[in-house]
Length: 277
Image (cartoon, rainbow, N blue to C red):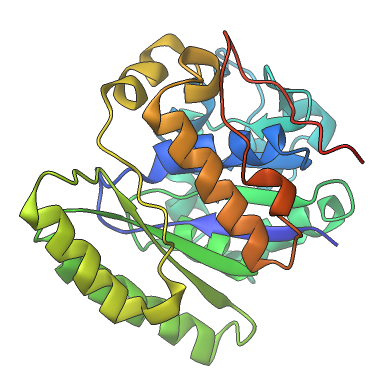
């Protein structure tokens, strides 16, 4: 059974979508079958992989409301092991439309359950809010990863978000696991980045991922070309950071990652890594 992982933080601008795209792509490069779901009405996770929904096209909104099948909404990316379900502007009205629907918080869970046998990991990119869409994602998920920008105010929002996840776990979804935090936009030259890393490490303990994502111009540029960092510049620091994050992600789930450690993104574009199996 595949694992459903939510990438969420109610604060915007923390690298949530960048992490969703590039962690999903990195896992695919490491020979994992991955589905990325763009659950943010802004649709940046889909467009960041070169996938957009044309006027009248089907999206995750139609899949959520059962007005389209999985086959009608899923799109393949430049990596054959990574599929994506894009979002469209209709998703913005879903919270209002579903407010009186019975079992509205479990709608995404209902449509995703049959997909667990198709993918090793299903990654959901959430909107920067704690509304019904994010709640749906949490109810469908097995675990939550929270990107945290290396700045002072990020800590305040993080504490509020963790409290919300704890309440969902207590009252609605006892099996939901807080996987941990990922430090983004990390600049080793700045004392503030080091201080935030230390604070987040104390907050999460062993849950904080040891691989920080550096502040990297190539990561910022890639979405404007509709590409993951692995298509745009696979040899840059950002690409290698996400590969190392993916390796750490797999190690936490019991994978034997000894052969992964020497893997580096080089060449003109990313390809699936052959582990010799």
